[in-house]
Amino acid sequence: MVPKIFDSMLRASVRLLGEAVTFQNQLTGSLPYSVSGVYQDAFETITETGETIISTNPICGFRILDLPTYPLHGDTIVARGKTHRVIEVNKDGVAGVTVLLHVL
Image (tube, rainbow, N blue to C red):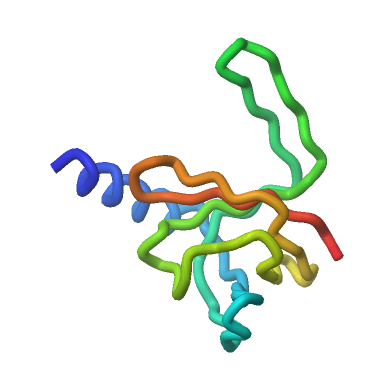
């Protein structure tokens, strides 16, 4: 029951805040796939120890069920007219995934 609630909340968030991005899995050489993701040019986060990390790398968050395949290091995402390479993948443990990107 709890994962379904989180998935519903994430679906609503992506619908409200998301924008169209193009995802391509490099391992399978899949065709580019249009999906809605929550893109940010830079981000700030707080670690478990309370330290603040500020990054100028962009990130994009997705609902896992919206993706054609699970994102992997090296995949390509085109957002806001820029091509990005996935450099880190962070699953939220329930229904979403956030990828750290490098602008090519």
